Image 1 (spheres, rainbow, N blue to C red):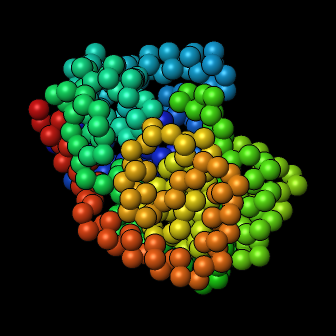
Image 2: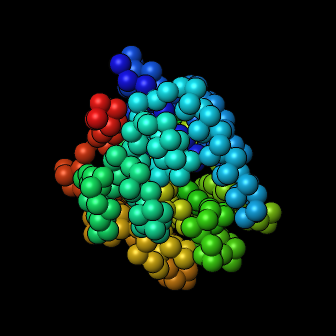
Length: 346
């Protein structure tokens, strides 16, 4: 049996890896997880009953972030020297890749954000497997592996997830009635420098106009304006995908959540600065499939959101498009498990 270390530093990584972690552990491989206190990362790991060791806490300023990652690199190396992994798995984590290199373990990294291609290029010579969707045009050499489908299919493929209406009802949500989710990110990550999300002015317009079509639930990484007349999240974080899957509409500046809602067949309007860039090739694919509408202009985005909320057939159209997209997609968890074991046996 293999000794496998998963390094999880962001809430999205919990979802990306959680089924693979469980399957490998159930197959009697020795699996350990290191984590980072960032937003909901450790809360989600606890909610999914995944044992983990916290190696760092997210800094709030550039100096603190630099200090955190230096300290994390040291602690990750110490962690792997004690554990002795055959393979270290991460979402392109420099500290995890460095620890694998020093300890002689294989290193597997997943990557799906072209905005961090420079980091991927720097780490590629030290990786055994660098896994991206087929939509990536960049070539990272010998370790580069491409797979069909976006990486969120690791947890939102029909094999892995179906929204649970009863769990929503337990938290006061009426899934049979229309509602909108407005998701706002903080734009505080290193790759977000100089970019802005949906403005407060547009947030107010969205809530004011969409409220005519049912409740508007707001999920935000940062503070929500006190005068924003919307309802706060009615469910715990681990039920977010249930909420998205039954929603009539998602409006967001979150790239991850836009992808998630589209994969669930929920109409999506993606706005904010990233909607005007080509840093995520996933959205070219999802846009062509009709699953995510990316609209950088806020006025146009608000207008389109209202149009979709008022359209009783929008949800059915998205479900048909989702079914067509999934015909050629894969269960990415199966791919992760196979790739990790290949790395461990190499």
